[in-house]
Length: 202
Figure 1 (cartoon, rainbow, N blue to C red):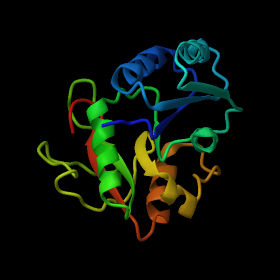
Figure 2: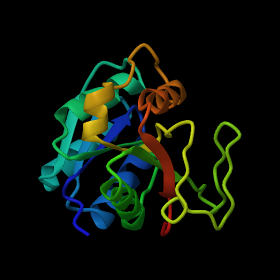
Figure 3: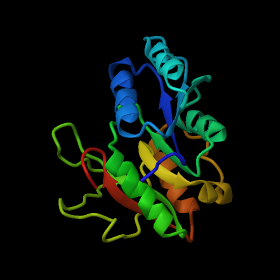
Figure 4: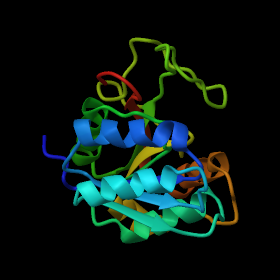
């Protein structure tokens, strides 16, 4: 599957410990995707790491903004993005091609779905739990879709059409959890799905 219609937006602030590995993983797993790093004034060298990637790979872009929080940074990245599908992801997340393909397939298959989030795994392979939501090990929304109350701001693929209908994230909120819950609510009659995994195949 060609993923050139996907733009990944990575808000960043002093993420030197993870930025290089995040970008290396994206270059290995999905070199045709557009990657936009939105830096909020980092002072630890992570901005320079992002610039190095942008100098080496034409589909990487870096923009510096004032640090007004996750929503502000993500929105600035979305405004620059050219893809049909927009992904927000934290710099400490390492996503596989299979996960991107699964989310892309879900959105392509059902135009009524406005956004999908992955099932996230910790470094040891255990599943992360958000807001009391936990999914069994053999569950996958690719085969068994279900409505959920939110998309995870740390990693979500949204259709451009859906964002144009509901608008960008509310920049009055600084941190991701309220933004992701609000996005799920604003999608209204659309469907938000949890569909794949942070690591490994969907």
